[in-house]
Length: 203
Image (cartoon, rainbow, N blue to C red; front, side):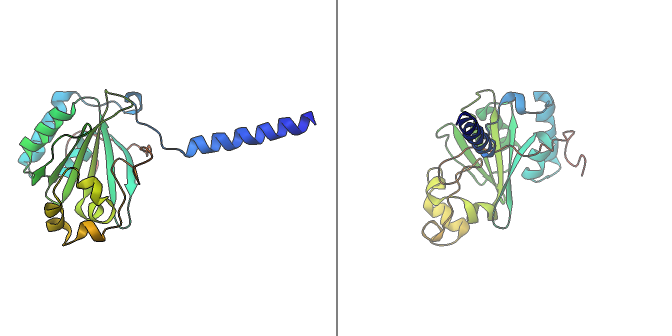
């Protein structure tokens, strides 16, 4: 009888461990690879802007990639930094690159629309030192993002003009950024591919 109880407890523990390992993990400052100093990152971004480098490539070269979110036909990438606050990075990017729209900061999050890319900046609730940066192409946003989520930051008229008439009614997307679907779940860590060193490094 005792052996059966021990066996049952062991099986339950294995199930719990498997469940925990499959859950999304929160990015903490300790998870982020060593970054260049703040001034060096600023220089990378400003130099890239002068060379007309696309915003997605700039962010890829300036910040550590933490995870990739797979969509139907395209992906988004989530980066992280401890060098900037939300307002600092928002100002730096919007001054360096031409923007189409900049949302207000709501719930510690802001979305900036560049040419063909949506860049989301979000304070990390679990670790205030960490700023999360998600880069999603227009196609990924159109196919996967929740209209109600985007409608919090931009007008429906603007979104319909970008994605097609009645996109907000016809879209079945339920993605709300940073690896979260249906308003639940967190962000899962992916393989880090941080290179640093400025645009084009390692390509």
